[in-house]
Image (cartoon, rainbow, N blue to C red; front, side, top):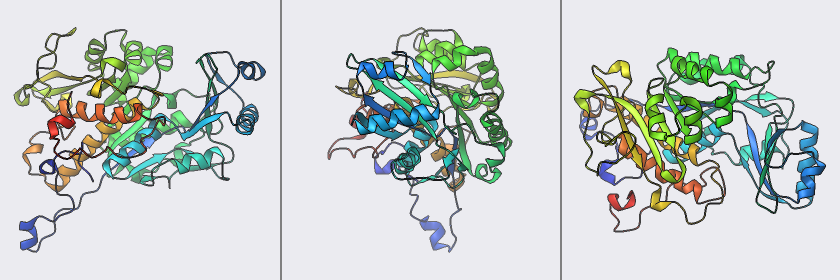
Length: 435
């Protein structure tokens, strides 16, 4: 496993080299295995530039999101393909994006649970999904279904307006029986999204998700929830507050979803409010940057060396060099916050913001997995004097998440197409991660 952030070599744990003292004594170091598990609605994102009259013919309200039947989706796709209107097709799904990015960053395995078309032909949605997913994402546990996976059409008219047409296909057909217990035994996290609990009454996906959450929590595996979109949260805010309080350890959201969940518009205050429900919060806030909020024990808090920042909570980043813990593991829990502005001010030109939040979450998952891996390899290390949730400080996690998010913003695809670029020769660590 790579350790987070492509730091200087001195910051890497030597995962490929045996301990020289153990080697001299003829003793092998302890084995360590870890991976991240995720459940997702398997779908493909299709971006197309279309004339206005196409929306009228397919009865798609301009600027809205409309669920369409599979036969209409097939006719729409065939027309877009024949008319060469498609700009790109990529595997989508917020959890699928996150696992792909995690495996690319960590050079480590992840396991995706969901459905896949039993019959796959070249050029179909299933084919696109498989071909755009990292080979280190284990797809062996996908449940075969007789029919297509989901498709999300983003139709851009000449005025720049984006209209969405969504064909669910069989993406919500994952059954509880298709959730294997064994995949949680060595897991570092279970990643789910709010979309999984918003299905038709006869869809088995919510029951499958709750089974996975139960299996993870029984083994002490952190449950990570990404909120998906503010509309889903705004429909049932009380349900989601109770769901997070009962089942979730880490929440990932943007500022709009944060407001829908907490009723607070300021992202920093929304993070503070969300900490009453869960252990760790990642909030992306567009041009403002991103926030990380968590708990740590007052005895092990670490003060920042960076300037103290103003905000709704004065000097809120004072202890951003701390590492987060579960509240129950703290003798005297305190809330700690970190923030970072967009890397290099953000890309000069942003093609799409789709996937940027998933990239930031992948970086956080990488750091959490590295913590579990290092603990298994070197349990007596000073890094593990307390049961911390991450390997790095909250400040460092922010910097890493920010850098990975930048890579997605600077490209057209919602998933990373490569790992982080190497630093230029002569550039030090501080310059590479510069705020």
